[in-house]
Structure formats: C-alpha cells, structure tokens
Image (cartoon, rainbow, N blue to C red):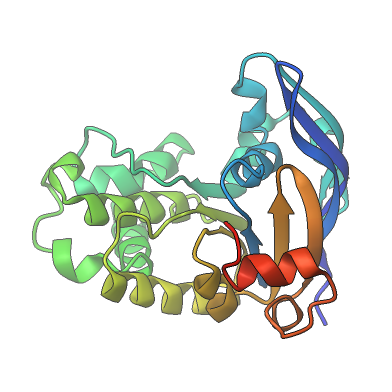
Length: 252
C-alpha cells in the first residue's frame, strides 16, 4: 500500500475574481496514475499549474488553500525552481526549443550542471525511448526539434519533461496531437513509469482515464464532484448521478 505523494486541502483559485477552483480537497497516491477529468473550463489545467506553482505567473490570480508534496507545504518552499524540477509538466500543444532533438532533451540536465557526455547520451536515449520517439529520430539527433511533425514534437516535449528525472509527471491532454497508435505506445510507457514516479493525467478522453488510471477525479465548473478508485467512477453506480452522466456521455 503506497502513501500519498500529494495532499491538496481546500484549494480555491480565482482569475480576476472569476472562480476557477472552489475548495478542492484530494490526495494523489504515490506511484499511481491519477486521472483528472471533466468538461472544458472545469479547472483541470489550473489544478496542474497550482501543483508546480506556475499559477503564480498568471496575472490577477488569487490562490488560497494548501498543497503538500511528501508532507511539505509547497508554498513554504522558497526554491520554486527546485520544486518545478521535481514536477515535469506537458501541456497540450508542444513547444519545441529551437535546438537539435538531442539538445532539447539535454538542455535541462546541462542547466543543472550535468556535463558528462556519456551520461547525457544515455539520458537522451532513455527519455526519447520512454516517449516512444527514439526509433524514429535516433539517426538524426542533430536535426532541429522544431522540424518534427506535431505528434513527434509532442513526444519530444514529453522526453524533455522526463529529462529532469521528475518525481511527478503531469500530462495535460498529451495525446491531442498524436495518432492513436502512438498514443497507445505512450500509454504503455506510462504504466511502466508509474513504478518510478507519480503521474497526473488530465484528459478529455474518459476512456483513456478508464484504461490508465488507478484513481480518477471529476471536476465540473471548478467544483470537485467526486474522487474515487477509477473502477468506481466508471461503474454503473458511482454513487453520484452527475458523475454517471459525464462518464457515459450525457453531457461534456
């Protein structure tokens, strides 16, 4: 039985007085895939931004509540950059650095002081393999990452997030620009990765959440409707009608 990697207590977020999250309390178990589902504008991406404190970069934002990682309040941690290195984040649209494929992955480790070429070579191969991209690019690592296809750039972004060797990986609609076959390959990788790290998966594809996650959180218009074992959320009787309606496509 694993403990909880993340504890969120009474988290509320407003943008210019418009509520995005209202009193969210939940826990994310260590070494599990935790899915966050819900219709558009329910606060799913905002939740991720709160966990790695990039929410603080947003204008006119107000945040209250507590978020703890390994029992430590993240807002009491003055090393915000160190915190973000512990949390890899992949957003829906890939943003490749104007560097080679190799340097896209090696950039963060180099900035952290890792200069040994053998170490970097091994790390780049490992991360690209985990992102299901190595076989496609291993013979052109010096090519610009921005010249890859959209789906390949998305996988490169995943590899770059993994290069930090994070404790937590947050994926926000990672499959939006990826073909179904590659999506399934990355899903297989995520199932293996959870043995090493904790994964938060934001997805509008409810069946993806059902396939991959151990627990699922359902948000609707900023409110936490339900958080439970995934098999409960997707059962014929999750206990809350709104949950049943959403996962069975009545709205969304």
